[in-house]
Length: 391
Ligand SMILES: *[C@@H]1O[C@H](CO)[C@@H](O)[C@H](O)[C@H]1NC(C)=O
Ligand SMILES: *[C@@H]1O[C@H](CO)[C@@H](O)[C@H](O)[C@H]1NC(C)=O
Ligand SMILES: *[C@@H]1O[C@H](CO)[C@@H](O)[C@H](O)[C@H]1NC(C)=O
Image (cartoon, rainbow, N blue to C red; front, side, top):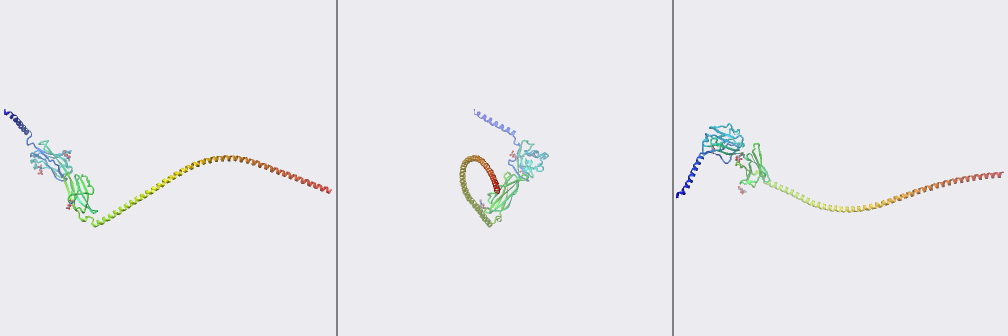
C-alpha cells in the first residue's frame, strides 16, 4: 500500500532524466558560439583598431572559414579567410591592405580583425562569423570613429580689468563641446556661445573666448570633449600678470570712463530734463495756443454769425434798394418822358420864339421899310415944298 505514492514520484524523476538526456543530445556542450563585444569599439582617425571576435567555447578556427562583413553597406566584404589563407578577391576596396586576422590566434578561436589607419568612413557595424561551422552564428561589433586635437589657447588682450583668452581646436569628430575651467576645476562662463565650423571632410573646429578677472586664479584650462568617443583634450595656461591692464592705468582708465559715463549720463539727464521741461512748456504753450485758437474760432463764429446777419440785412437792404432802384428807374423813365415832353415843348417854344423873332424882324424890316418910305416921302415932300418955295 505504501508503494502507491512512490510510483508517481519515480515516474516524474524518470521523465525529467529522459528530458535532460535528450536536451544534452540535441544541444551538445560543444556547440560553438561567436562572441563579439556589446560596447562599441572606439577608435580615432589614423589609429589601428582590433574588432574583437572569438569562438566560445574555444574552438580552433585555423581550418575554418572566417568572414568579416559590413551588413549596412552595399559592398559588404571586409575580410575573408579560407583554406588557411586570406582570400580577399571580393573585398571592398576601401579596406584593401588594411585588414588582417591574428593567424597565430586562430587556433585559440580568436578571430578578431585588425584594422589599420582607421577612417571616419569605417564607422559602422561589423559582423564576424564562421560559415563552415554555423552560418547562423555571428557577432556584431560597432565601430565608432572619432577625431580629436589638442586645444590651443591664446591671449587676446586686456579687457576692462580682465584678460580675454581664446581657445581653438580643429579636426574633431563627432562635434565636441568646449568648456573653460578655473584653477579649482569650476566652469568659467564663456563670452558667448562656442563657434563651430566643419571642413570638407566633415570634421569640426570649435572656437571660444573667455574673459578672466585678476581676482580669479591665473591658471585657466580649456577643455574640449566628445562624449560618444569618450575623449577629452585639455590645455592649460598660466596668464601672466603683465597680460592684465596696469592696475593704475586701469584705475585711471576706469575713473576716466566713470567720469565720461557720468558726464554723458548727466548730459543725457539734463537733456532729458530740459526736454521734459521744454515739453511741459511747449505743452503749456500749445494749450494756450489751443485756447486762443478756440477763442479765435468762437470769435470767428460770432463774426460769421454777425456777417451772416449783416448779409441777411444787406440782402434785405439790397432788395429794398433794388425796389428803390426799380422805382427810381421808373421815376427816371417818367422823368425822361417828362423831359422829352419838356424838350418837345421847349423846342416848340423855341420854334415859336424863332417864329416870333422872325416875325419881329420882318416887322422891324417892314417898319424900316415903312420908315424908309416915310422918309422918302417926307424928303419928296420937302423937295416939292422947296420947289414950291422956289417956284
Ligand atoms: C585576440 O588576439 C589579439 C592579439 O594577440 C589580442 O589583442 C586580443 O585581445 C585577442 N582577442 C580575444 C577576444 O581574445
Ligand atoms: C549599428 O547597429 C545598431 C543596432 O542595430 C544601430 O543602432 C546603430 O545605429 C548601428 N550603427 C551604425 C553606425 O549604423
Ligand atoms: C579656489 O581655490 C582656491 C585655492 O586654490 C581657494 O582659495 C578658493 O576659495 C577656491 N574657490 C572656489 C570658488 O572654490
